[in-house]
Image (cartoon, rainbow, N blue to C red):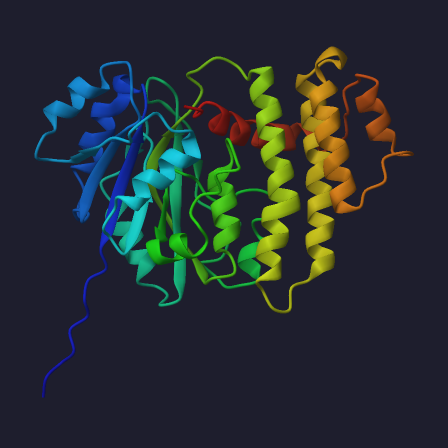
Length: 335
């Protein structure tokens, strides 16, 4: 009797790099020190102007280096990297983040938990510029295996994973057209939503990476507007597009979540921007409200926002802490 052999799943790791040479060695060394080696490690230098090119020469023969013809926007660059990966599955790790030794091993374990999986996520630590850990995330709020349409429901209020701790089936990425290039900052969240109709999301609770945060200047006003425009695109285009591809979707739940997200963002922006800086965001919010069926004419919080006031409530502090971490982590990665 002959036993059928199970072909091992191949996992490629891509590293989109741009002007983060000060951390690049640590990132690459962490990927080269895995308990299980990935199929390949591919670094894409997005036309860096720092020491990135010199550092990559030190790793000749250990990693494969690619380069786009010209500098790309962040989502375009991520898609460029993935298009050059040969594995059945891929993971991307920013060139300032760190993979724990169990990074590949844990992602492969998650891939094996469901034959219908399209996405695997692990836990991560948040570190500062010196590598000191400030927080740990174990994804306790999601199940070990989430199936559609719950894959969509869990994501509509905000991303439930980290860009530093995920793997995606490449054929699924191809199916949805890659990271949404209409987004400037939140394309990772956009991809998770686009993948939600296609299969299971698997969670591994082990900490597999370190996500570097809090080492660049504070939020910039122009980036706040860019982030808000991404929120508009996700709420009015990407979420409805994903829902349309699913059967038996609870439209009321989705509409309620989109409206809740609107007011959460309204409160957050009110904390950062004064009245003189809100003109562009007011236009975005009005478009967003119209698209999700919100009437703002008699809304008390909207009137406060238009008047340049801050919006407060009893739950704002805890929300602000979590939301600011998520926003800042995206804003700092603009290339």
